[in-house]
Length: 286
Image: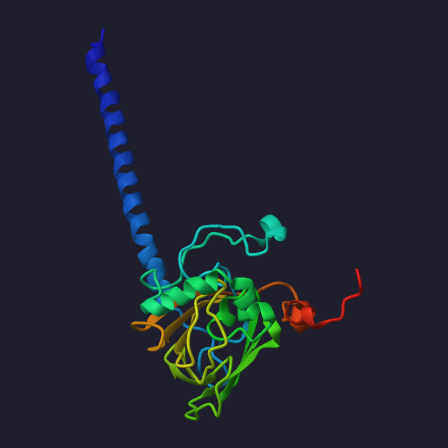
């Protein structure tokens, strides 16, 4: 009769080998998983966008940010909105900030001004009054915008307030006067469209949390295709009157791929008339 202990050794050996193989496979899978993000980033960095007629990357399309930067560029928790009667639908959603380094580098006096603005959003936020949203805020409002690309001029049309900008490719002119949307000169840097924006007034905010700037605002924007339906947006902000140093916001933009995607009308003046001028209208006797 065979020795039972001896006959079981091959089985035990097979089980041990199988377990060892599973452990090795698991470790290998973890290693590959850890490397995947870096590989994915490398693939995105190597993406070559389709070309426009002039040979430069084609940025044309309808794009939209999907984040909470419109409410607050910095990290923020959810909270009640400024209009209590709107309840949950008027609340501010929680969000992860888009500012490199986390905090906007305000000068002490400007930080106090920002906090005061935040306490009086309804009265002070220019966008509530349907003023042109300014740059970069127009890019990440909860409305889409469209890029129409030409060789010498690029049009950015925004749904909010029917705002628009013309980017002058290889332009060197300066704005004849300060405006809400500034004056934009653009150039190509490989796969990236770089836009230098100056000529602002001080009548716009960066978000609905009171973050603001002066008429000395200077922006350098960068638009880079990172995939068929993704665009990386970066804006470096400089304003020596308000901030201690330049700072940068960064976020992905997503192509609107809906059937019949298009910009629709949002001419908001009529929505703000009562807020702005209601106190001037005659009211019937009570």
